[in-house]
Amino acid sequence: MSTKEIREYYNATENSEVRSDLSYAVSLLGDNRIAIDCGCGAGSDIAFLRENNFTVYAFDIEEESIARCEERFKDDNKVQLSKDTFSSFVYPRASLILADASLFFCPQAEFKEVWRRIREALKSKGVFCGSFLGPNDTMAGPGYDRAAFWPNVMTFTQQEVRQNFTGFEIIKWTEHEISGETAQGKPHHWHIFSVVAQKI
Image (cartoon, rainbow, N blue to C red; front, side, top):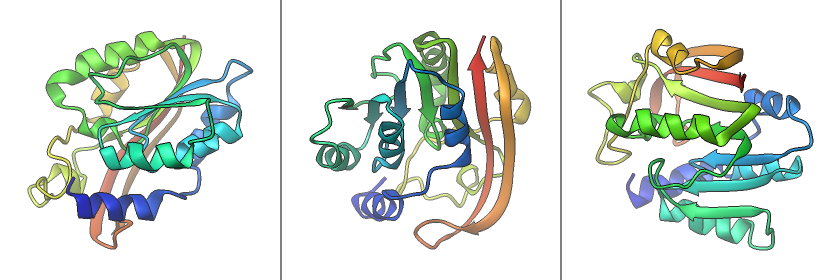
């Protein structure tokens, strides 16, 4: 993503309200509260997780993200930040793994190994909360500006998403398909599968 679009996106999302899926995922967990935030952006989910007594390991590929989060959480030693990709990040054992609107951008050739590492990092009865891009989303089409935004965009069919969750109980499943505007005011058609699943 170019610097201008990154800054606009983070300015628009740094104080986003917590999504119902994340609130629900947190409600499923007991006292063992260790979370990984994959693609932490401006840190709104980190802030919510800290309010709920999680130790948070968070990473993002963007320097702007890490710089903002380092400033935002500079006095909090229970937030560990790193500039990493899905493939370079070293996943600690966790009770919650959050990957909302981020796995879309994992290079497809790397996804199988990344998903294996995510599954292995999640403890038994741990919860995955995240989303997968459907084939009808604007970002999957020819009009998506890969030069201005992220060049890698990976889509899944409903069946492909469900196949990823062998060994999990899918507790909450939502298919979102709606047209509107992005946080930057640009028209967009969303097609997203949101999943909350507990490892068996």
